[in-house]
Length: 244
Length: 303
Image (cartoon, rainbow over all chains, first blue to last red):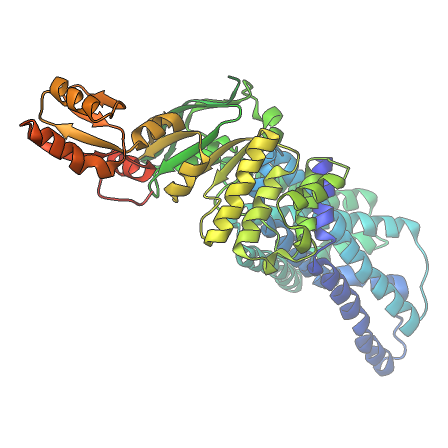
């Protein structure tokens, strides 16, 4: 698996898509400062701080779209170029390929997300009212939430890529799923005031609310992790059963 | 002879269609095995199975006497259907990807392979900008990463111009002679395959219908004058008198005279002068293409 990670990292870091998404992620977050400035001018009593901005960035869900796009491009590039045949033909086990690819994309997706969060933090700090209070535990919960959601979403995209083997379909399904989850979560919360599982907004609320008990937080995070594992296993099964 | 590949009743069924039907084959070290068959005969599926990218429905195969392909696959290089290239990466980067995949830390072998396949000047070119011939060469280069002992090449000269075909032929011969790499090649261009292969296998509707060595093909390929319908003993005497001593009498009395086929008229006249009038005097001998067409039941030259 180490070799797959090393090769996939080499490939991803030499393709434009990764750098383009990092740049878009940073710029789009930073540009949101216009909204922040307007909000502050309209409602001067409003308090916007660096850490709050960062936490809110996760709820925005935009970064998960970037992750979806990036993961779709990486996973399907092996199919569209038919390199998957060479990779498996060189003796790489399909399970190693799936794990290695998911791990690589997951790590690089975190880089894309981290860039957005840094931009959000800077925006909140410099345009708003400073960094805000530092809460180590909340940062930890925030990071864990980002990790598990990212893992689940990357695994999901790999499964879709293994099934469809087409960039266009994988992109559409990944983006549609991220969007529909947000829409469902928003509607459900608005209508019933009940929160929805597998939605970044719900996860974010739980992760960054001071009133969330540790048990509740774990209860929210663990299903994401389990879903990630199940989706990874499903990816391996699908990949094993199909001829290339 | 050391066996490199041995398949035993290898079969692949898709739905109700048997694409490869109990193919048992043996390829020895140093062989250049040419696999011939019509479109859809099962060549690519057979190659996919032994290249571990399609699972056999039944039957087994082994490389180097080892059935566990996780141990042997790194010793095999494949180019099946078309070169697998990342268009955004350069020639060097594409090869480096596979170097890393095989855990090879020394990048010098990449330069060596690139020079060997003649892509030294295009090393920094993005692969989407390469010509078809260059892509094919790079595909072979990628298959060579890790210094395999055997190459499986599916239609490696398909779509190439005459110069490209000669380049690839020379490269493959060089790999076989200098590095001792065993080759399994399928190709539609039978004349080209005839110049390369040392052994041929004919596959039809998934069944391996015939196998022959290059020597056997050469024997079939020898041009001869065939004399039918005369007493062979008398024909032989006449031939001896004409100083034509390379002949063969077949079952049924047909005499094959291995000589310049332009002599057929002279032979006919000499026989006629002795009152022998042959039922037929024909030019015999076949190349791979006519052999293949005959084997397939005639009617097509599309391999």
